Length: 449
Image (cartoon, rainbow, N blue to C red; front, side, top):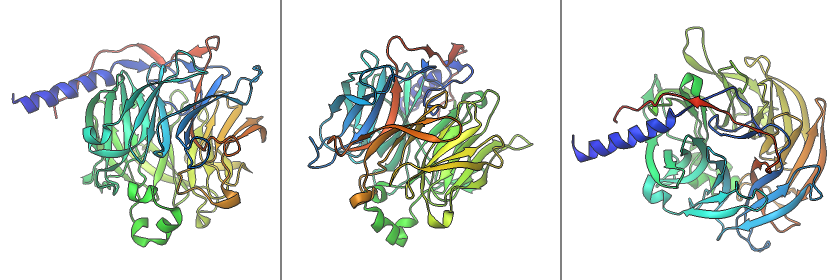
């Protein structure tokens, strides 16, 4: 066997061992939008909320930072910032993800493609920067690390662009020590009868079915430009993804491409045991899509509901599914609303509640018991609103089954922190936690590629 083929086989086998290492048990969740391979999910009250925050020139130190907030209502510091950890420069801080053991938090920047790894396991109230990965572009050929999705011993990265910054991209795999393992391109040819467009965004895995879904957004040329200029440019508006891809998870090979027009963003599998369907929200068309097997066992994507008035482009940006799979929160950026959909019939979701939670809203994370809903405001530095509409906040709402009631708000502009984006929960040593991982399964390798 030639050296190049042998190396490829070794890489594929190593990844396969990681992918088949654990068989997850019944799903629990804290913010309900985690990988099924994440251990020690929080069963009770979360203690700390970490917010990956975009730096703003002239505001505080101007740097991107990890902001830690005490969210335990029994703490004297409840609703207060307890730690601010700045990293060098500004590079469009965006999303984060825990390693599978939940000890480390990986956080990426879309502009300079730098990844920062924080130790959040030793002292959750005071994270420490332990590693910086600055050669992602050289290693992978891609830019814009967006999604950080833990698999056993590995971190699976969803990227937004390749080196030409136009949009076509792929997935990258690193081990938990920050070493590059492999890359997998998003298909640009026909798979299952539909042509792929090569765009990437989110990742979601259903281990029981051995399927992985990826979604699509746009390239760096668009997401780093002013939103008004993008909207006014017909050519730019054509450079958004209109597909999702179904993969064989263990072989990391695309099996089918779905037509899902309008930039489908976040993907959420139902967390209810026995459910095997997922939903996504298409940003530009303001539609909810259902991904589910049909009567013949074939996976299909189906447009199942409108989000607000699609003609007004409310721009759904983040979604959070309930732990029982019965409801879904949807944040829409343009009208500042947080909406709740009834998913008891996923073939026909119904909006049952809405509330204006800000002049602009982006990320939404609910606790595993569904009683707490956290909202942040920033989408992208060049896409956020201007003037008085440029609110930058973190808010906590309680949910009693009937209405959202604001508990507290942190004004990130007033506190000179920046633009708050993605959120992750951690627990103190005394918190009640549960492992999502079951007993080790057999070690399943992957065929050489």
